[in-house]
Amino acid sequence: MPGTGFADLLVADGVMIDLAVAGKDALLRALCTAAADALDLPAARVLERVRTREALGSTGFGHGAAIPHARIEGLARCAVLLARLHAPIDYGALDGDPVDVVVLLLSPEDAGADHLKALARISRTLRDPAVLAQLRAAESVAALHAAIAGSVQAEQAA
Image 1 (cartoon, rainbow, N blue to C red):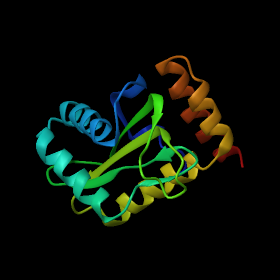
Image 2 (tube, helix red, strand yellow; image 1 turned 135 degrees about the vertical axis):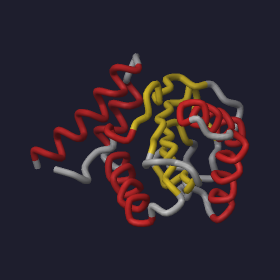
Image 3 (tube, helix red, strand yellow; image 1 turned 180 degrees about the vertical axis):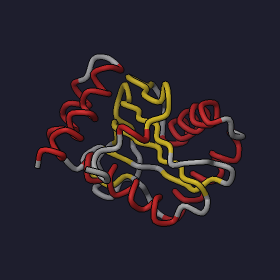
């Protein structure tokens, strides 16, 4: 069923396990650099767009998860990177909890509905306590992928 999970949005090599960062700015810098490399985009532009969006309000939505996102000129499709942090960081999340699961969503500049649908799919998946537990327990990139694939299968079966 379309619109479930978000494994199909992951870029190649877009999963980072035990990413060690000192804080929110270092996290955004690391994610944006990896995304820029994977998508052949200028890293400075990606970071600037993500920081601009973050300045409007924290994308840390609760339960230790955050979905920083931005629209980027020159991008062909919605693209996602997933990171599980080595240690939770203060992200300024809405519930005040530190963040350790982060999904970066980048969308084409003119992808209004697609951007919102992707954001909703990611949010729905990360709101599932079982999926978050699997992501936190995963010991490999393959296990992180399996956690996302499992959420897609569970949603399709529902």
